[in-house]
Length: 219
Image (cartoon, rainbow, N blue to C red; front, side):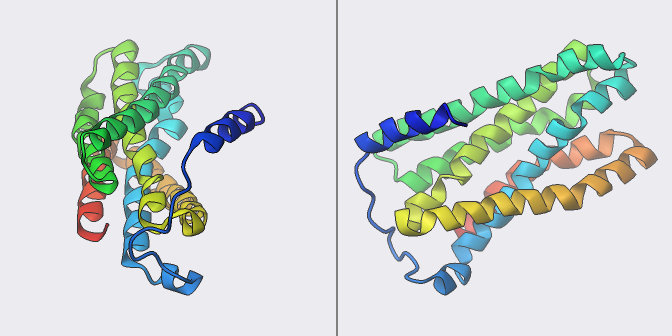
């Protein structure tokens, strides 16, 4: 975090000031009544539920599904978060490429969200993968896809609300992720205990697509 601060300051000095977004709320109450903000919160909660699944359950899944010792499972579990970081960079880069071709910022970001949602659909097949290595690869693809979506969802507030309101909107997005994680963790545990990981992965495969649908209708 401390290393990131000078990198951020260096980049921020080179960036042009952003005006308020078109139709940006003038007060906090206006922002809280914004349909676009609540759409972003819902989309973020849906998409980040998949991220929460793999950041919290990968090691346990590998131990239970592939009977790995805990130490060995942790070696495999290191890989998906690293690939997820690549998904974040890739999602930001791809939206920038489309914006440079003339696509409006929000449209470019939602287009990446659609691409990420499609890429996340093979999540449903993870319980069918035969080895721990293939499972780590499948989980890595899933978390890469949702990270590409996430980085764009977290940036859209700057595009539509402008710098004066974006920070509060992003803090709300972080809160929506935390709330979703608190709500779904017991549900995942109950479903896994009763039915295994198949239903969990099947639902997870569709959540980024549901997030994209919410963005299309509200943002």
